[in-house]
View 1 (cartoon, rainbow, N blue to C red):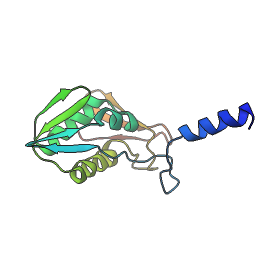
View 2: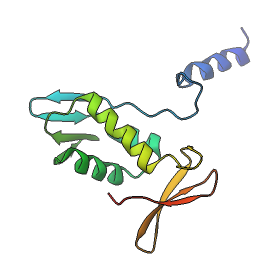
View 3: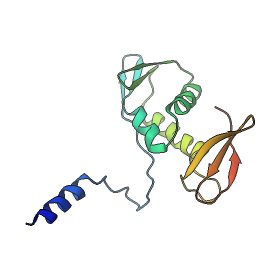
View 4: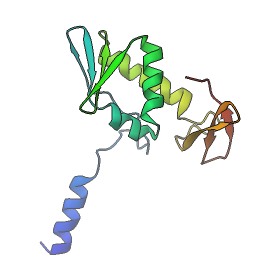
Length: 135
């Protein structure tokens, strides 16, 4: 095996796994553990990065949707209360629908910005702008 083939194999091994449907965007899944009366969200910052959103915005959304408080420890977010992984994943899907995916073209290539006092989602793929509900 040549050096090129060895390097190519290393690169292929490091590629992320397939999404399943051939989509280029996959909604990330939460890594959650319920411990006593608290829920530990281990990969919160990874989810925020995958969605290309400010972690503070995503956290504010979760706190409102779950009606709870939180604490941060070692890049983990710990919610007060018992919230199963299925519920957290459902909230992530809701966030993607409302704050990430473009309503026109359904692409995730959007960014949130403020125009005057209104929060707007601008699609970088089709160019459309839509007002979004404030978190």
